[in-house]
Image (tube, rainbow, N blue to C red; front, side, top):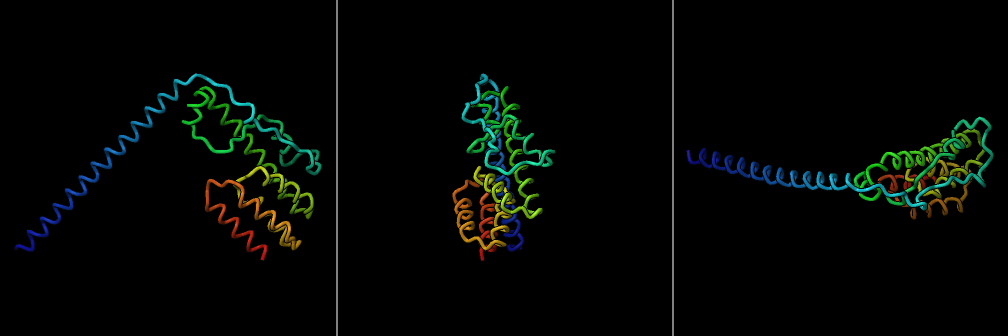
Amino acid sequence: MFASIAVIGGTLALIILVAFLNYRHSKGTKKVLRQFLDEEQEANTVRRKEIEPELFFEADLNGLPGLPEWDPHRVMRCARRKMIRFNMPMSNLELKKKYGPSQIETIVQYEENYNEYLRALVSWGTALVKENKTDDAVVVLKAVISLGVEIRGPYKLLADVYAVRRDARGFDELKEWVNTNHFRDQTVKNHIIEYVNQQAG
């Protein structure tokens, strides 16, 4: 009987503890939500501010191989668009606070234009590798990586080319780029480092 009472008492205490923790968590969640809504409301009142000229990115195709006339990878078309390149990512809330809500759509579009340009270059470099035009492919892929991209493709393609060529100097340069480029996702960086080291032997 006493054992049953003890079990009941223990269960009741557990229920009370869980309820208390849920209550505290709920209060914390409401506080965070309230803070976010307040910041959002404040950001929505910010007057429109011009985008700093230094944020605009101009594509430079000088030094790259000649593009096919029909531009199958859309490199030239993407290069002509207005592009913005942030060194550090910003949330929509941060963008609103800095430039005003009326600029958000424009900024997001310019950022997407930049990402499309990078994807076009990677697509072109990939095609050059498949066509066995590895000298041209290296030039294009190095141009992409020099912009500090965070996608795996160009790094891995360059590593594949260097592995076939047994290009130790190329691998040294590639490793330096991987180590100095900023990656928001550390797992992506670790994966690239591991792949490059494997290919380097």
